[in-house]
Image (cartoon, rainbow, N blue to C red; front, side):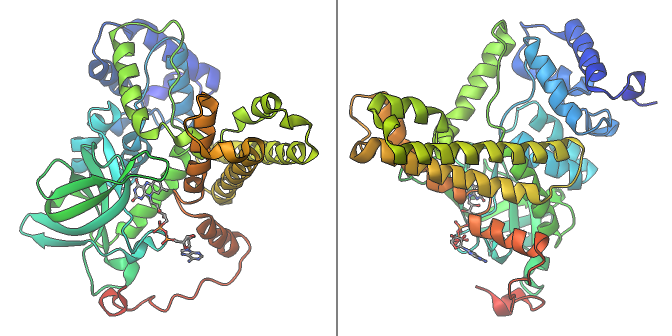
Length: 418
Ligand SMILES: Cc1cc2nc3c(=O)[nH]c(=O)nc-3n(C[C@H](O)[C@H](O)[C@H](O)COP(=O)(O)OP(=O)(O)OC[C@H]3O[C@@H](n4cnc5c(N)ncnc54)[C@H](O)[C@@H]3O)c2cc1C
């Protein structure tokens, strides 16, 4: 019998079961890690996972129901970040039992933080063309190369890394997926200053960085398949970057969780601006007197309609995820819609603010935010796969258009290379 056999798999039944466990167990004076340890052991941290790995084999939507119930009751659920969003689900899907034993629990409790070392100077959209190289030396892999645009790499404990382990295999077949300890001498992360003056991502230099043989995720040479799994999880994770605390939530656990979230948000403080800050548009138009201008009104109506339809698409994607369905075309359509909303917000803010939108120090705090919006929205159509790549995916997978020519397919990467 599984733990979930003791109640029906309905939202109400799951919420009641979580709250019953929570009422018995919650102790606001515990430390955050100790509390999350109890949560993980209870099966309510990731109820959709199997019993062997901290879950209860419940449907995918049970995770959200459990976390919301705990937060509403004044408690603390899971940490934010690439650990929960990318590393943990990828390891759960593909890693050996030994790797899961070493890393899953510490990732779920938030003890370990993670970053993603995928992109390289010559391999972003064409990720499978990456050249960072891993060579087996006895019981360890030795990695050399350069990664770039790696969010949080300057302070993460661990990384998920894709590197080329076989230059004689075809492009996609020579890659291996690793778990890398960032805190070692062969790893140097240098923050990159962005045009909006934040520095949330880095270039990372790997010089004889060492990885134990057991830290391969999936099979050697099958890293592309595992990386695609991470990218699918990334689409869901990229819309989930905040934690709500109930007003009544107090105590040591809550204090430590708030400090953890505040630390995490330092990196992502400009992310709302990158989405365009639609919430500011109407008040801003009214306060500047531009709300009577027919062109401004028309552009505002356009962005609101775009946003509304993007929300419906996101709702469809979420419903499909909750049902445990593999990511479909909604992911690409939703990502494109968010880029369009961000671009249109940029256009509307520019119409409303005029030249003062370029100033970050007018004495009006909203001007500062608008200036940051104008410099941050381009990131929306790049991160997590550019607009052009989403259109390629839709063209090929949904519309059935011919695939892009791939002259390098099937030939040893060493021959086709860069
Ligand atoms: C905010 C942010 C956070 C990021 N965080 C991370 C991270 O944590 N870890 C990580 O590894 N990476 C990260 N990235 C990198 C991101 O994944 C890449 O920037 C993205 O995949 C695009 O790659 P690129 O920058 O090399 O651009 P390129 O691939 O060089 O693309 C340049 C231009 O060419 C177009 N293009 C390329 N190929 C095609 C094609 N086949 N058809 C049509 N047009 C094409 C693109 O659409 C784009 O307009 C982050 C990026 C951003 C903006």
